[in-house]
Structure formats: structure tokens, C-alpha cells
Image 1 (spheres, one colour):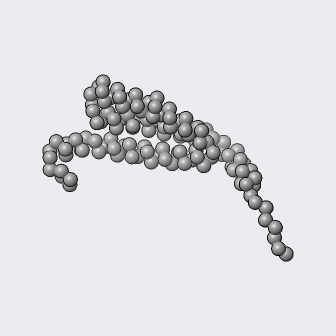
Image 2: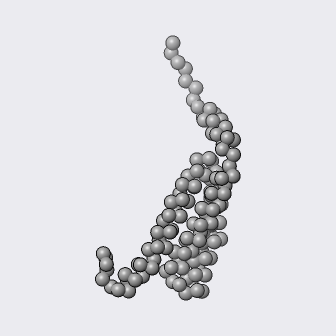
Image 3: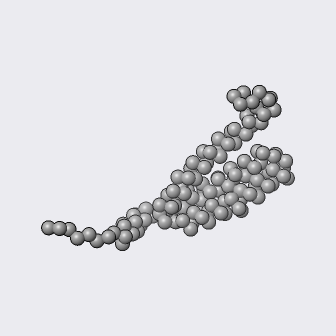
Length: 122
């Protein structure tokens, strides 16, 4: 009752907030895992996972839930949650299957290649 005294609005918000909370939690995980992918130079992998998650899973799920199963606003948010789940699982799989010793070597090589030689004064 913080922003509305309308009983219908309060009930609708009470239904939507748990879905929104789940969406925010999954989005936080996705943000961290996307940062790992970006930091490792896997922008293309991250882009494919992002596009696939939303365009292949999220949007069709939202359309199905909203317009065919008639759960309205919940369906839209649940479609986003479906996309986020796929995105988190995919990025987590890529991250866990990574050879981190090899990635550290690649990062070291990139750092040395981009270093600017500096002459020192003696």
C-alpha cells in the first residue's frame, strides 16, 4: 500500500514481485558471467548466447505464455526469466569448461604484445 490503495493493483504487484525478484537475481548472475566472457575475449560467444537466449527461447516463451496460455503480464516476465535461465546455464557451462591456465597464458601474451617499449635514462 505504499504507492496505491487500489486492491487490484496491490494484488497484481504481489503476484509480479516474486517473478521480478527472480529476474533480477538471474540478471545479476548473467551480468557476472558475461563479464567473464568479455574479459576473456569471448565477445562473439557471449553475443551468440545472448541472441539465442532471447530470440530463440525468451521471446517465443513470452508469446506462448502471454497470448496462448493467457497469463498476461506474468507471461512476459516469465519469458524473460526463461531467457535468463538459458543464458546463465550456457555462460556457466562455457566458464566451467574453460582451461584457465591456457587463458592466463593468452592474457599474458596479449599484455606483452600491447606493451609500449620505453627507454630508460641511466
